[in-house]
Length: 539
Image (cartoon, rainbow, N blue to C red; front, top):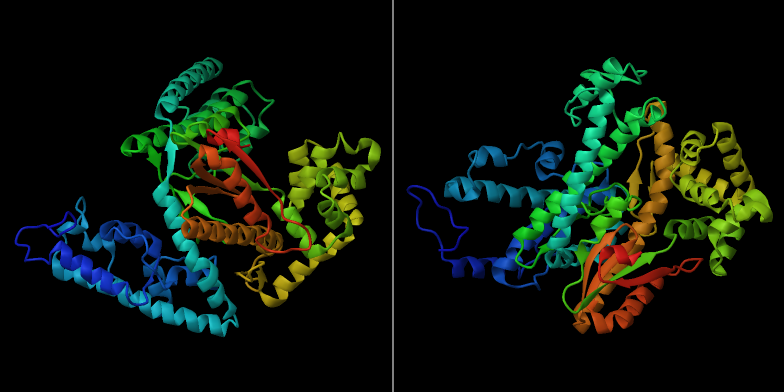
């Protein structure tokens, strides 16, 4: 009897482990459709000790391709689309117990319903894609999204090594930093209180210290980052609080959990889960732990990355797409200045600064041009630009106006995305994935947000397409040629690999070439290669 057998008083005879294995193998001789099948494949590939299992389709991915903003949970889709309320896990499994304690009859009902609803939804989604005149997305799913499940599964299984002793020392340092900040905050407040309690903090700031109140919430005073940042010059306690929050967040979200997870693994490796359907634009998200959000700009954030290391005799390789969204802007808008800058491998931010501020001031104003270049892709308005650059809203408005005067093709291209999204109700990425916008039922505030998001989705979504294609291709090359290389992480526009130290240079260049040539655009794609012993050395 194997460990996952049902176990309760009066449990009837169950099939042997061998019979279970041969039954599951038979299933995989057919076309297997699952809902979030990557989750199941983790168990099944381990149980059968077989990594070559093929899957035919995933109904969750189809649901996401039909509408990337909708809820993708099986029970919610069943409810909304089939009018059928599914048996819930919490009603099937008693509190504090596992599935092993569920009676066989109930377990069969629960599992059979899952399979039945998945099949019904799969067929419904194929019809829906036809009704949306989007059958090209069935091909996109087969060629890109479904193979990507295996690419991610391999990465998740591999995990990345963590240097536990480094993290333990770091933990002690961070606790000392927090203790020091806590003492300073208590002194400045004139009393001790729970700094992590927004309610207590609100009373200290706005009643004891009588600072100007920003906004109130139902439960008291708001002390969110925006409120605190607005009070930066009002009292010396504020910078200390902001620093405390940042350090505490990194301590509780990353340092402690990473240490715990690395101790639970025999190989000191942590395994994140990549969520293929986690964003509306198509970018991957990651969870348990989320490795996409480790801040890089702060010394503590950068230091956390030192804990992610290459194994014995190995190196980490980081390959990062450079300015991928701006290259896509040049590709789509075909603006002469942008296209020529990328074709001639010029510094795009410096070129923009020359156009905006003239030759003389360009070098010193490059960082402003950089903020504008990226900001406009994300729909940054004058208010946000003025906050980011620390200039007046009037100056920010003038810079944006100058930018659009100088790059008229970009302005008209942005306009065309917005117009098309209103007319069709969706925008498309490079691979023709769609993101829908319901302008008709939107409030003015939402309409403005949809305009920003429609532009952003084209660039973020297309960047996600390119890196996804690259990952599939590299995964295929590694498997086919049985290379001594493992793809470990994807963080936004960067891929991280672990390879034998002596092969790092050769394999790094090879993978970079794949990324550079994955698709031909009107401007060249360019990725940069870094090799190091830990993640922080890859920048």
